[in-house]
Image (tube, rainbow, N blue to C red; front, side):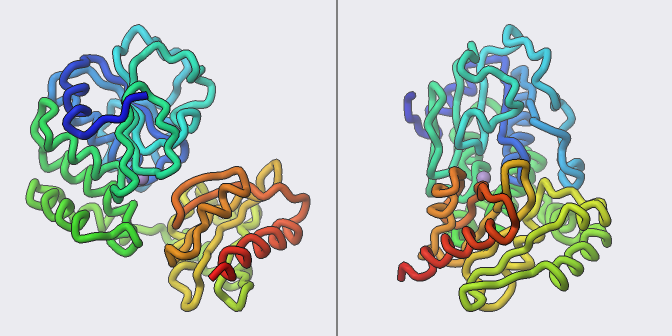
Length: 329
Ligand SMILES: [Mn+2]
């Protein structure tokens, strides 16, 4: 359980030869940008590397995929690798497929992450909660010199991670430092316009119609409007055939509403109701709510599960927790 710095992490990338890269389930832009960048970089450094993804790459990220990814852990032969890298993954068992027996992974590993609740579970851990994205930490490792050049494509993949984890430089983790690092990536040739076009200007029309119906019929508010949430009925998901694996776009809609402080997406789950929460103000920690719901995440972005039999009951529990946080000041 050693804590290391980016220079030492670069040393590990130079030292080992056959890498397996893993990231968290339901991978977001940072998880994917970071993983693709790491894969490309290691291959360019003349290493063998494979990326293990827990599921198919979400549609909007397919364009960025370098190709050499495997989607299933079954049949994975540990003898093919001598090192495992975990990216953007605070808890080891959230990485890749749950069928893997994580307690018995026979490889030394490096855990690169910026989640403050990271469990430091690997042999080597580079966990920097002050980093805006895992991609930012990886950029520092590459800059320290880990055997390859940062090509325009690699720079673009790192910028993708930073853009998505900062909400395009709008979230609380936006700082002069991250903007300078993003500028450096642009200077290295990252294709900013391509990223923006794919991430923000390419929403399928059905997705927008789905959101319109959600806003019209399923937006609820409490705590004087400071808490707002969508309950997303399964019928609606079916009607518009939307993929609910990535709910970032929906969260954005709620977050944009004036005077909201805490916004939540609720979905039916076999054990109750799953909640994905965001806070607009560092003083109101949705992380603290998530921890009470046996979930996790950052203080400003977190998720958990409300064990309740009915929607009304779950909403009552949500309101109670939100009131606790909103009225603490
Ligand atoms: Mn991240």
